[in-house]
Image (tube, rainbow, N blue to C red; front, top):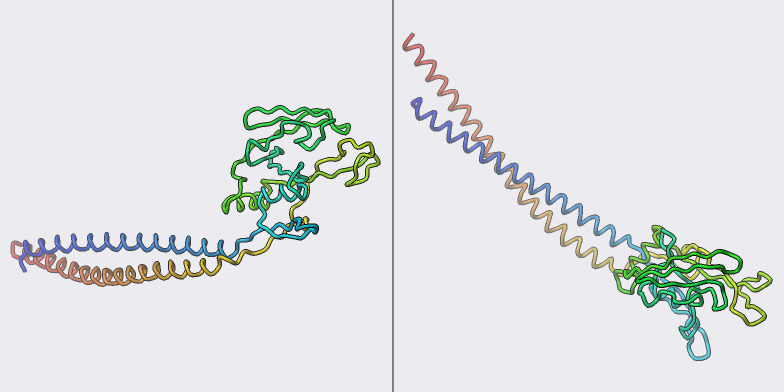
Length: 280
């Protein structure tokens, strides 16, 4: 092989090497993306099999008797559980956020009077509504009251907002408060002997200490989650296996090209040395 032919062959081999190296890098990148996708699938499967759901046990009136009913814990169900048997009256429960504001799910739930806020119609508490906010201020039972009500529409009932409310309770974003009624003698759950509005106070309660709330693993979606994981995992692994095979083929071709490249380099070097000897 002449010097010119050898040089042309060397250039072709150099281009071939560069192309194989680029393809190898491309396959490595695609395999890295698949590994990230598989990690995401695994994390999603772990979340779905480890998720929990809060249930609320409440009393419901069936005819003349009260019976217990277990429902998903939602903002609406908790508020209704604190109302009278017929769903009337002011709820004994309310929710505060981490900023200390009372939260409701709809502007229509904002209090417009002291009674709506749970302080009775004869208290020295005033309420002013400003758009999606309500300010409750004044004096009640010898204490200064200042509370801000805000609207959080995500608390409305749906499959997503149940999780929103429940996760908010778990991570401390929401706090449950319960109204404890006392009479003039300081007895809990009593009524004023004069027939006036009952006297009481809002107290924070821990949801984990409430017998009405149970927090258990939610297993109804585990079978679907497992099927989705197995399907996605098999698809990712099949694609990765094909890419691995392609990568090995490219590595074999690259090694062969490198061997020929070194051989042609030696031929060129030999031709150069022969030429210099001829003219020396």
